Length: 371
Image 1 (cartoon, rainbow, N blue to C red):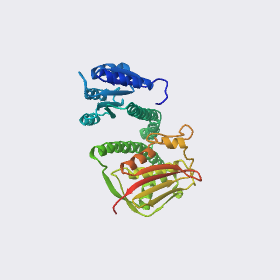
Image 2 (image 1 turned 90 degrees about the vertical axis):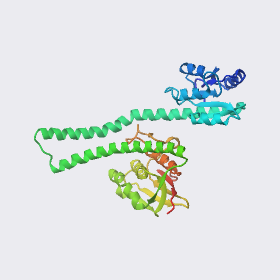
Image 3 (image 1 turned 180 degrees about the vertical axis):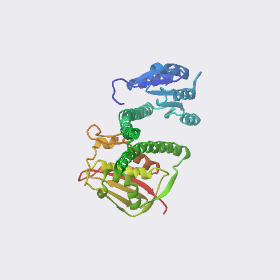
Image 4 (image 1 turned 120 degrees about the vertical axis):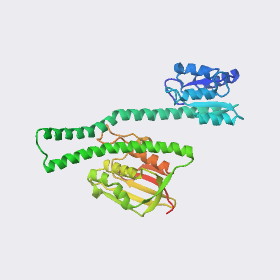
């Protein structure tokens, strides 16, 4: 069990008195706090006060059975994410399938071994705690970082627009150089906002594609060609933004890969932009296409400050490291998007420190196409 100041609370609904008492004793001996009730109706009534970390429920119960309890829990905003484990007789496979289709996290068959029940509970509570931690971190990050990332470019757009209005109202006109400068600054701010919108759009699409994949039994992919010329074209804006065209080198033989319908160009641009962002001007950034028998690796290597082992274990969508020490723009979605994109296409994404030497190497592994 995970060590914490207060014991985890389990709400158990079981109408069989003997099973209820034996299970309660087993859980109490393991250090859990247990609230045991006789049926689903009592469990529903107890939910607001108990606020359990996990719900353990039999299926066949009077008044309110386990399925109805599960429906009510999943429809309750305060408890919809609470891990729910159903208990059913070994022969009742229909109950197990029904429970999983309604959103149960797991099931145990009766009669069960105490060790199996405890392991199932431990795994589900640990997973729920991890997901809750990630959600809280993302919420805190959005509250702290996103307003700044939106406000800064918006302030630039509004500021230049106000200047143009004031000049127009006073009868002044912008000289050609000033007009170009104003337009460029407004354009840069607009591009920054557009990038944020595109990142959220891609993240949302990848998440919805994951759900569709689980329902339909497979991902819908397209075949696309990977060439050094295409990679350079996708990275043009990032390179131009940092003024480091001379630092970027791209090499490798062309090949075809199978990828999700959208996002490849955005993911590649993010990886190169990260390499440029976290390395000094003059430090080279290498992009290499490595063709393998059944896959293609796109490796992006930089000589920047790198990441610690702890940071490597925790990178994800909407997560940045060292922002309090180093000035950096963006909302920290690039690496998480690359990982999610690769997974949707049956590939993989890795991020490792260069040894020996400084910097990182990001590797996007994609399944090769038929061509």
